Image (cartoon, rainbow, N blue to C red):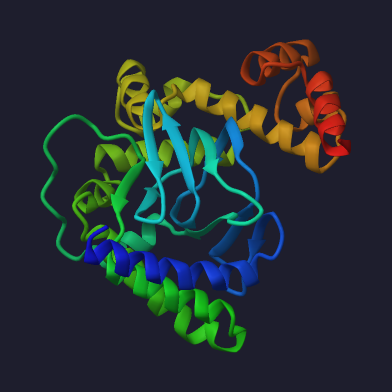
Length: 302
């Protein structure tokens, strides 16, 4: 381990100790800073489909592997992960235990926040269109700002005035990183990544409505075929697949956490046919909704 890595791990350890207090039990914990959340996990979690929100993620203890469109991103306390748009990913926590739980923080941000900090647009990166997922080595500057942000989360009376400074500092260093020009492209109006981000946001907001791909293509100033190609390059899915994944993930959440029956959850997310919902649910998650609900109940009671 070189000197920089040792310094980084020391900073990560202090952040981890503070997160352990702010997240005393397994799960996702909100903080006094609205855009900041903490997560604690005490045992490995097998690969499963989930959605990564428009956020910056930092792990300070444990490690995680994320897969998007066949590409694998493994990150640990020496790396951070950024996704400018809402993305369907396969996520696996592969290092976690009761003695050394997985601890991480998630900072949600908007394209407007990135636009506000850009100034002169960076040069357009060369190469193929990049997927909207970026893993980068952590720096001392980012860890210093992260530590200040976590300290502020422990002093709620100061967050209103000071948290925005630490958040802007983190995002400043992110967009001035090696992959910063690619991330900035998602915030530049009318750029191809920005148009795909707008389409993803539109589908996310109206996921339970019928999807008109031709209309979406017109909004993006593309043909339907070009929209399909570019949207899939960034998200790993076609617009229709993206909507279907959103619907099924939301229905799953409604069944597990809001205790809705499968038929009611299907109706709420936009399905008109319960049998179609059951087939597509089983295809995505491996079991029909009723069977998976029963399995989770049994695992909880074990």
